Image (tube, rainbow, N blue to C red; front, side):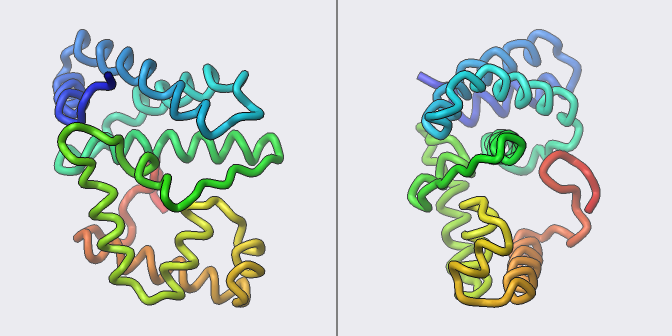
Length: 189
């Protein structure tokens, strides 16, 4: 059974405080957590699973200072995993389609303590206007390019870009984060 949010977050916080054993245990737990995550999504690229897991572990280790302890750890680490997978697929010119129903696994692990991150994301997304919600869903959750999302949604590429920008800005404002907060791996936008 995968470690819970509380266990993983506790290990992360102890690792950030300088506990090397906790950091090692955290990386070991994540090394067990992510192979099934990637295998379910990369049916044709199953041989790349180990490489993707290593990329996630390296990113977690090198970007750990960017983790905000007031936020759920699993949401942060699954976002890293999702972006690593998308980058991998783009490098290999493939496409991964993820049903919106599966997005919960991308935002946070399903843990015994409820997986509240996904319900929070659903609630926040419902507050957005439909155009912003659809543009974010297509480009950020399903991984479509702006051009593909434009064709699917029947709006111009500029409209998709504007809707994504405004929607993400609105979500950031609702979460109380300034628009210039670091992105998925700690880089300033």
